[in-house]
Length: 157
Image 1: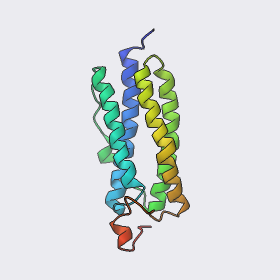
Image 2 (image 1 turned 90 degrees about the vertical axis):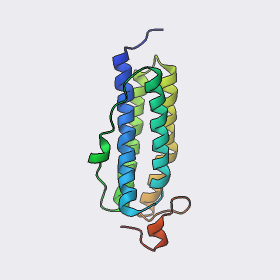
Image 3 (image 1 turned 135 degrees about the horizontal axis):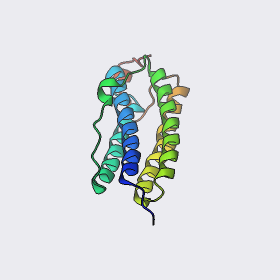
Image 4 (image 1 turned 90 degrees about the horizontal axis):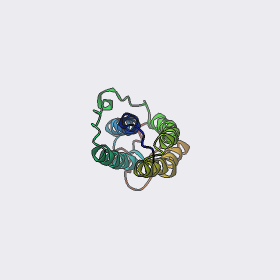
């Protein structure tokens, strides 16, 4: 088996974790702005798990973990609907990014397995949740993460 260089593996993992950092920061800002609303409360927990899965690979391969630069620069859309539309776009871009990274990591089956899991969660869970939010016009959905603003009768848009 031909191994890709550690620099290439570092680039793959860095791009993946940077995208997860970005999503987590944006969704955290949305929650701060609009309250504990679905789908953001559910998905931010998942983003944390995605980051943890990637951190395991950084540790396994002895690659330094990049700093999360997104906390300070993530911007929150003006309405919940815009936030959900941003989520749809981000999850579509996320899938394309993982396609590229999966091709690049062909010599690392363990890395590919993690990337495939993250891509699947994005496409099968996150994207449909954001699409439902858009279909509802940004009105928070039911279930976990219904949120204090919804209970108070304000949906935030």
